[in-house]
Amino acid sequence: MNRSGFTIIFLIALQPLGALAQHKCDSDAEAAQDRVVREFSVNPPSKHDQTAYLAWSQELNAAMATVAKRHEECIRSSRPAMSPAEVSRINDCLASVRRCGDEVATRYRGRTLTFQEQTTRRAEEQTLQDEYMACARTANR
Image (cartoon, rainbow, N blue to C red; front, side, top):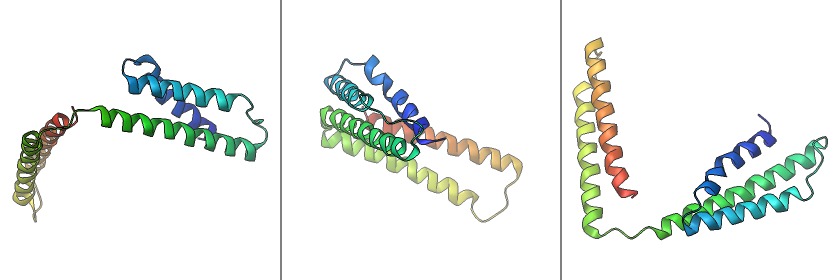
């Protein structure tokens, strides 16, 4: 895939920003995205001049990446700070899941597993991943 393909994919990836402009961060990002698209579409180079087009698309990708980074930072900074008790609860949850993962790894370490043991281990690991994600999801609220 060439650079113009990446540009198009990147623009498509940012389209949900326009559809969900309910939050100040979203509306700011949408405005910045529109500004970047306007600026870069004023005088695009010929697609036949590979060098100029490649440089132009790289600059466009960098500008859009900057918009996306600012949007992420805005969303992160607008989240309310977690209380120390909440942080402690999340860390305890993650530590518990890690301990269980270590126990599973220790239980099956150093030997060839039967098909049934492999199936059981995969199921246990999947359960642990789900539990870990549940702990992490509460941290990202």
